Amino acid sequence: MATNLRSTTFNSCPSSTEADDEGVQGTCDDASICKRFAVSVGYWDDPYLQHLVRLSKERKAPEINRGYFARVHGISELIKAFLRKTECHCQILNLGAGMDTTFWILKDQDLLPDKYFEVDFPLIVTRKVHSIRSRPLLLKPILELHSEDTLQCDGHMLDSKRYALIGADLRDLTTLEEKLKKCNMNTQLPTLLVTECVLVYMTPEQSANLIKWAANSFETAMFISYEQVNMDDRFGQIMVENLRRRQCDLAGVEPCKSLESQKERFLSNGWETASAVNMMELYSRLPRAEVSRIESLEFLDELELLEQLMCHYCLCWATRGGSELGTVHPVF
Image (cartoon, rainbow, N blue to C red):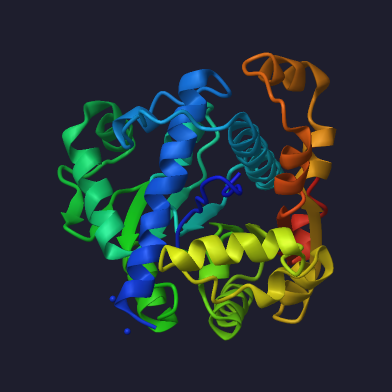
């Protein structure tokens, strides 16, 4: 989970301003470090994250670890549902990807789409490109799928046959589309777009433009968004204030009032269906054996805080091109 009352951490999207963008980019490290710690404790397996993210010396609270487990599990199930529905004949656009390792995990599971794209701020992409090029465990899977002698690569971009990493600002849609098409994005393919705590750092107008652009660009598509919700109450206001003190303003908190407002942002911008669930509800749907396993890893003495955290995050997924895509049924 991306935040608590002890220390607030979020996931990514220089005046409104360079300082604001630097604060947002800093949340990439926060979220990645939290995921790395949860993996080190045994919440889920990810052999690749250690090559992108350092292990924190600071122990993360059990409610944070359980929150991240639910987040990773929920997004993974939605991605797999889309891949099953399209039989992997599709493309994935992970927008604000940070140090995400889904591409490598899907390759291990023999579930890769035709092409996997990651987009983030150029500064973050530069770091990730360097890590990939200098670590064989990350580079080898990309080269194994690449038929050319050399990769297309510079400081802000890496492009191969099945994987592309692009430095771009999601608020500049003209440049974003230009860079994606340069890396062979195919608007005719069924397309899955994924954002994790990204839209909330954009103004409502900017995020609406991105959502509308996605709806207009792909005839058959699904959009997964992991975001804050129920932000009108006191707990939500404390989350906002904690981030503001770190020069990280939630410019797009307005659509995060409720599950209904989260769904409406898609339905009013070109998407045909929208579903949403708060993370406490998702957690209650997880397989009991898996819940028992993770709950045995660490003792949690503040169940109320876990519930508060989970109720202030949600997964929302929207679809268009229903006759082609049908109904996506995640297993949670």
